[in-house]
Image (cartoon, rainbow, N blue to C red; front, side):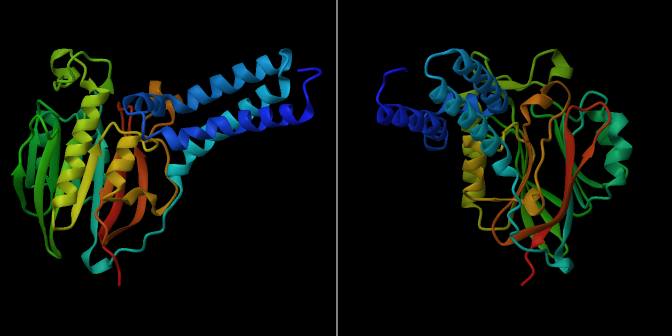
Length: 321
């Protein structure tokens, strides 16, 4: 503002530039509010930056507005791409390695069958699966379990599986023990409902089955992630969590999981896993997480016909000493 003391103007510019960075202080403190903001953060940061920047060009507090706009854009970039930085946790003991893959198969499930089989994974987790694809994959994986309703998830293994917990209100998937040749490990294979504006947070039916979206409230989604994290934390065996978690890696729920688990996809740079109409949100919601003591190598993403997700694949197992 013309006539305003230089010192006061400088303080105002500094405050405007620092204010957007409060996101990193508040993001885990405001509950569902910041959960929602985390989902739309890249688009929101861009809209705010452009809007405030345009106002700054014509308004009276030009420098402060432009400082706020630039800072907001930087926060959006850091918050979005920061969780994709490789962590370099170590390499897998090749004698105990497990080739692991997961996919949300989408609406044309049999169209993706050859893609899944071509991965030659030891263990495969498939979300939105139905009976036709289950029967097709079972020809190559004699050890399998599937739920075609509820979370609509199937697990296929070259090695024996023991079901420890079936899908239920607190677990949108299976808790299994995989009896691998190099040692047993527990697998929490889940398809968590999408956080949305539903009334009671209890919608668990697959949309292709009955026309109802597979959704829960934001608070309901957080409760389910808490349950999954608690299972992983109290398990005294090696634990793997995999599937379509509908959980963005810049959100509170992802950090809740990674308090107990390592992200197996970050042996290299991360990337969005959801494509098609949600691509602009730059969300990575499909995950492969392992308990400390296990590492990952050779991770990657692959396209799936008729799906709005990319699948994930990685070699996981006990870390090389």
